[in-house]
Length: 94
Image (cartoon, rainbow, N blue to C red; front, side, top):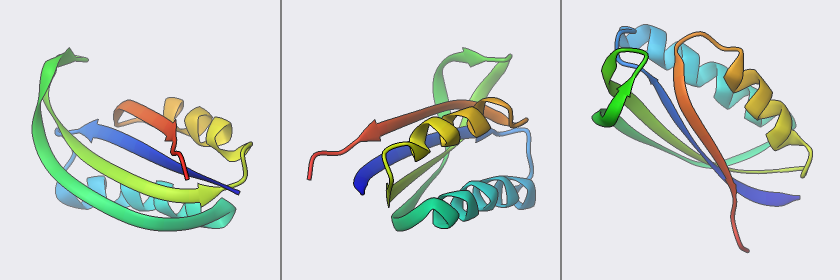
């Protein structure tokens, strides 16, 4: 088991319920394959540059512990999910 941190930037065009459902989907996926250590909701922030003609995004940071093969699957699901602008998964030093 290894520790990871993922940052998820979702579309600000989604309403609060849709954003919460999207983040909840990823939280349940992580919980099914590991354990969530913490979730930090940063809220709506201005992007450094427009992504898909959007100026703002909703940021969420999740720290979790899982097997080493799970982050690749999580990244695959991020890429095929509508409403996700950018993601980052980083392995943390223990």
